[in-house]
Image 1 (cartoon, rainbow, N blue to C red):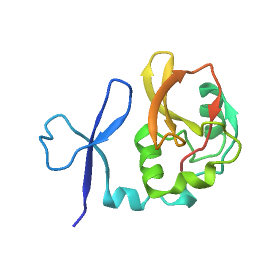
Image 2 (spheres, rainbow, N blue to C red):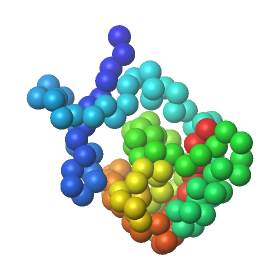
Image 3 (cartoon, helix red, strand yellow):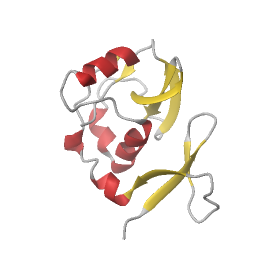
Image 4 (cartoon, rainbow, N blue to C red):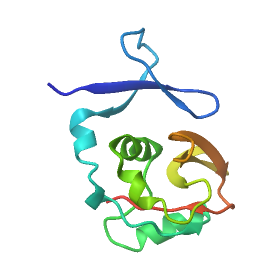
Length: 131
């Protein structure tokens, strides 16, 4: 049977997994079936550092590609897919399409164990695209 992973997003944007506890306020991070679809071939190669707006534009240049959501980035991290992206980034942080507020978006920081944070869309961070 499919397994569903639940989690809570903290004020800092981190996701804490919770199993066997009160899940009234939990969000579904990914299901077993969904994580299987997140194979490496569904991701672009690492594209370098750029601002969020440039990252979104770059991903949309290829039909069927887009900037991934934070949820998709986290699932890729748990599946080990992010290891192939780690080229020249100091902190291995990657833009997501998930907004924090009007001027900031969430990042996945692989070097810190898959932590999430947010940054102003005008700074540069790593980019990968999702099919």
